[in-house]
Structure formats: C-alpha cells, structure tokens
Amino acid sequence: MKRILSSWPYALGMIGLFSLNWAFFLFSWSCDDPYAGCWGLDTLYWKELSLTVQFLVSPALVFLGAALLGFRRGYDWVTVLVCLVLSAAIPDPIIELGGQITLYWGYRDWFFYAIYVVVIHLGIAAGLVVRAVVRRRARGRAVHA
Image 1 (tube, one colour):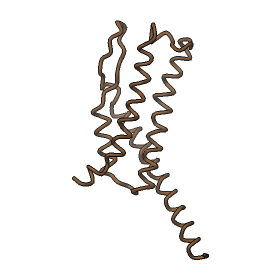
Image 2 (cartoon, rainbow, N blue to C red):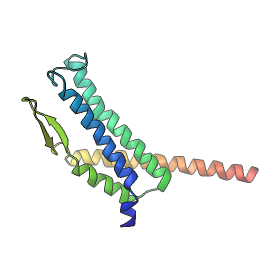
Image 3 (spheres, rainbow, N blue to C red):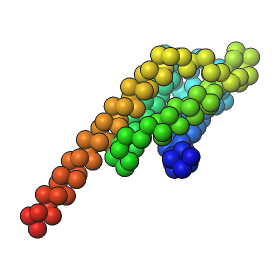
Image 4 (tube, rainbow, N blue to C red):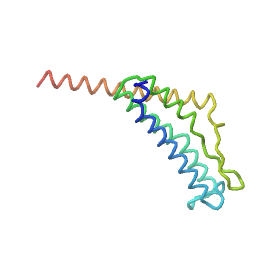
C-alpha cells in the first residue's frame, strides 16, 4: 500500500497529461465548428494539429515521465500499473455535432495500451541508462578527485 501511495507524483503527471488533452478539446469546442478548423487554421491544419497532439505530444510526455521514473526509482512496476489504471479511469471528451460533450472510453482498446506500455518501457529504459551513466561518471570523479 505504501508503494501505491508513493506513486502519487506520477499519478498526478497522468492527470496533468489528460488535463492537457481535455483543455485542447475544450478549446476546440469553443470554436464555431470544432471540426472545420479553429484558431485561424483551416480544416486540414486543424486535423493535423489534433493528430499531432494525440499521437506525438502525448506519447512524448508519457516517455519523459517514464524516463524520470526510471531515473529516480528504477523499474517500479507498481507505479506503472497505477498510472495505467488511472489512464483507464479518465475518459476522453468527445464533441458531438450538436455541440454537446460526452465522455468516451472507446479509444482505449488493447492497441492503445500496447503502444503506451511500449512507450512507458522505452522511457524507463532510457531513464535507467541515464542513471547508470550519471552514477558511473560520479564514481569516476570520486576516484580521481
């Protein structure tokens, strides 16, 4: 239980990540027609921006959070599991044609979780490599000092 409670900074990071997605969708909802472009962008550029946020920015932030986890704690499977369960619990906002926002969990299928598990483990591996390099350099300086 203590390990679950000690994973709160990473759980808060997951909530922050989903808050960024929610903010993006709510800003698009505030436009006249969220599917026809927004903020001075035409439809094609708006859809490209949406795809960039969903498929590049969000995984990059997950990778960086996992790298921080790997650097600070090593491989902590409890924290990984807490973050995955939390991501399953938070819905995505969907803007319907009538302008209503509904909560939707349908985007998160096995493929979503498979990709995010791969991204998380690559981030943890990168954090472990950086941690090993930092420790090796610190040991080298202590010996030569």
